[in-house]
Image 1 (cartoon, rainbow, N blue to C red):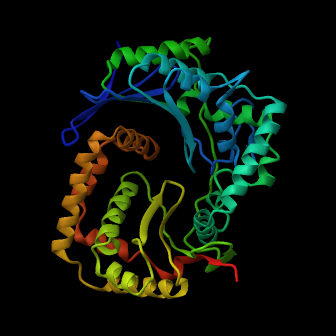
Image 2: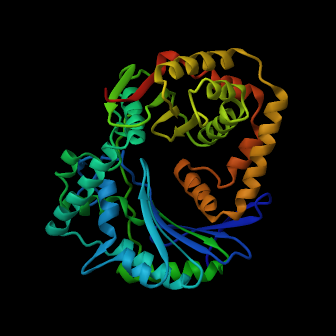
Image 3: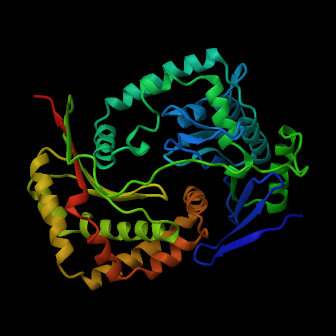
Length: 433
């Protein structure tokens, strides 16, 4: 019935079927033989950093307030006289949603009521209900959420690291926006963003589980047809235009420090990198995951020494965050001795950049990572995240496995040398005196 592009992984024992419906919506069905639980996800390539774009309805370029993508996620759950979360709950189905810098996803997971859940998920997305009154009510709710995060030291130290690294890029702003920016959101702006970024060609529908592929796609299409009068009638698919300037590596400021009423201080070191695309993003993710285990895990001498000095009780995290719009590494930790740990980290990074790589350790960690990927096949969440990453970065779904296999010691060395002090910013949250 449908034409599929098929992508398969022998290592994971799963196959993903991909087809594009007549309205431009791409559907991914990841077949997981023998699994009882099923997941469905309806997502859009629209997140918090996309605030400057061409309104698909008018053809005019506009700028919208920070936080509107997250606000829209909240409002789509609200229907006239009811809430979609409650509707799923009455069915005995778990559901939720999330917004990131570059995408938004609504999802359910269930064992028994799979077909009904697809119906409900399509209804959730295709029936927006925004009014002056419910927008004003939501401004208060999200304002409280923003205030709560402003009191969270982990959140503050992370976003201050982004603000220190980036000069103007919207990644500097909390995904939820600020109390000031969300005060400018109204129902008309929500409908503008909805019609532009919740258009089928910008969206994706993912199903993971032991399902009949044709019947699943058919069910999704039948539900879509209920809400699109011109479905499949030679409708013109408008191109989505968004504007986001990619920054150079120059940082905004060297250090941001904030005093808060907290028990334990926190620190982030942020290294701003050049932006890469497609498979290179996956390569950096794989390399950083290996570096984290090789140099910062509980099995390392660094951890042992810092623990014995009372600097840390848990390993320092070493994480890469990247897309076609931004790229950086963040090291973070909780410590009673912020300045001492900062000095130790900087010395340690300089040291590992200049010392030989332990070949035995490298091969051990690489095998461990490959083993973890195989074991992850049992986790449906990891399966759908792999698909979303492939969608956003425009790569094949299982490229991450081949890329990890191809990582060499030279790749580790070259990446470590990207950690340049000239492009490094520091964020610290200390105790109020």
